[in-house]
Length: 482
Picture 1 (spheres, helix red, strand yellow):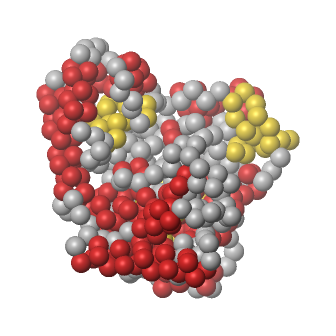
Picture 2: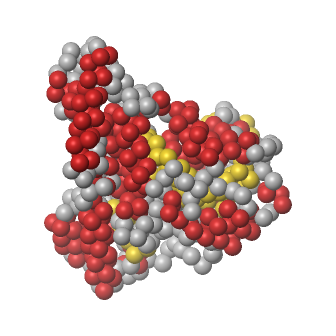
């Protein structure tokens, strides 16, 4: 296809976008371009190698950076236009697409925080204050960017412990940030909200504590893209965050891998100026155009009927939980699209409960010894909810299970995350790991959250936590013992 033809097809997509705007729906320039290209049935002497021929059935819409298609990390055409539509929807200064999930956006956020720290004259390795329930992607970013971590541990001893949760309030955060040993190197505050169990942090209060000390608030909002579109927004951008990432695919009608990096209007101008370069630093030069099209099409849905459908789904989930609570079941979290069952209250481990559901062709999102998590969306029909309730009602509650997860002590730090991750390591049994130094974070712990992070000592208390979550082997630094 000639470059001129590419321009013509881009122009055709632009006309479709103009028609969409006249009809009151947000246009989808990326999807429209690709569909027009596929309909023209050109001879494809370009990547991908399938040339549009069906294997899975989606190949005709799977393209690369041909003329007119734009290029994600140098976006100046239809991708830039589509991202601008998303930015308006989320009320951001800038929103960028990721075809590699929130993991890419997390690394970009942390790069921007470190860059801003140095731009302001910060010396030495930057220090990020982070909730202990940070995802594995945070740890890989620490290794790649070589920053140190001031870990924020759960502030209340009386709360049920889970690796997935780290309840830090404004006072907890303020005390940590005011520690003289840390304050001079602090670059940002980083929290995960909602967490995997559906707890939403008081981000407004945390943002206030961070901003009073001149620090940006970064939020891993991977599970909460939809929070912007509830009747009252609970999205981090509307609660004081400076940077946040959303995994669109987790709760919106987007293909797996679709995500956003958002920069708030209030944020340091450097964040917007360098955001594209931050994403390019870690992202593949071959992003999936199938994922990009789904992000693009989501704009039309979010500017149309989807928010109303979200409200209806949240109401259905709340009503279901209320009916089940009357029958003795107990739930955790306050996120509207999660049904997090405290299964031990009714005599089951989370995994046992998930297995019962699976035997009835209902697949949960996640289960561990204490919880079973089900995620709902407007794509779940009334019939889906009715089937879930029908199966659930046949599960007879039993005697409460009293056992609770061991609460780990704060580990000793012997190496930086970078030093540990880039050390030569070996895989050993839990018993042989005691007295060694963690090298790689296990991915299997609730979900990709580690009891001991790279560079920390593995002690008996931590081993108990690993056992609780069925982790049998650990990667430790070779030749280093306490």
